[in-house]
Image: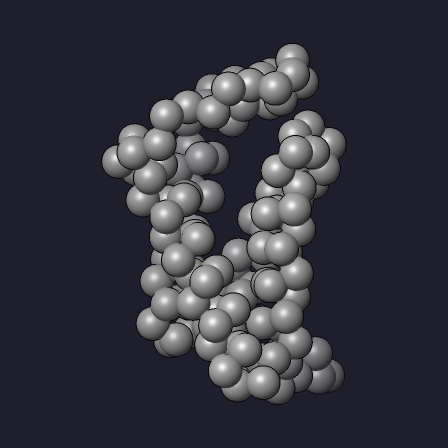
Length: 125
């Protein structure tokens, strides 16, 4: 199980690093918009001017934490709201990318389960 945890942790880290680095350095071309709702959502995200850089910065920090194996407990909690949003955005607006979003969410839940002993103190009274 330890090897599976390392593999999942590193794969999530690499995915997050790729997504954040490609955003900051404009490495990937803009994805074609699939429908009007998704286009409106993207325009709103871009118009906020702070939300995408914030999310991508958190992805970068968490990706580095996952790949290095340090502060994984904190990175799991920081990236969880972003993975939930990725899952819901893909579910409602871009279902063709839902398998990747679902795997990212399940991998995050798996890592939270594997590091659950580190979270026990948060839930004690």
